[in-house]
Length: 262
Ligand code: FBP
Image 1 (tube, rainbow, N blue to C red):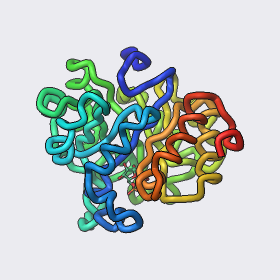
Image 2 (tube, rainbow, N blue to C red):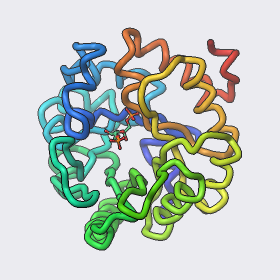
Image 3 (cartoon, rainbow, N blue to C red):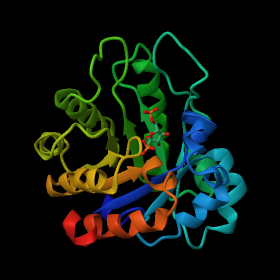
């Protein structure tokens, strides 16, 4: 594994990735709570907050909007994705961008890839990830795996053993960081960390919840030895995204307890 700690998307060993690929993954419904969040510029402005170590977007959004922000925002280009309009027989996330295009044309500092381990399409996705990972090594950019176990055999994708397995697959296949759903407790995240070697583990934000509940989850990940957060809705669906980022900065980078930042 390359030295991830000196990569631009990590600060003092931890990360806060602002994810904004929801227009593809879920559709405009995710922008309804805060309609200005449909405008990519609104979210790029939010990503200028110093707590944010990278903004994760799809190719088209990066291409049009990143040039205005390249001095102030680190870019993670998500290389695959799927819409909610599609109803395939099992989970699959098609690639829509190469590492070469992401780095050379878009200015990516890192790349991201969704892996649905457990799907009938696992073999194809492993092969696509192999190409991404090897090309990323050649360019020296870190690879973040959205490690989402899904498919017919997966009955509960938040079970600790399933999340731990998904994270371990990230290590086995050469990811520098995995982004996993929160399995429910600090103890559960410790189990994930225990099988993830030196690879970084970050929590996936999930649907919007209260400041208190969200900060408790993030704090339990940090105190379990995890490395932070990749979050979308819990930031851009708030009227004041900067306020939650101030609080997250304390918990993720300054070793603060939730009650010290609330
Ligand atoms: P959220 O914090 O809003 O959950 O965003 C994280 C993320 O992984 C996004 O990158 C992605 O669009 C979305 O969640 C996918 O969610 P799901 O896998 O549940 O469809």
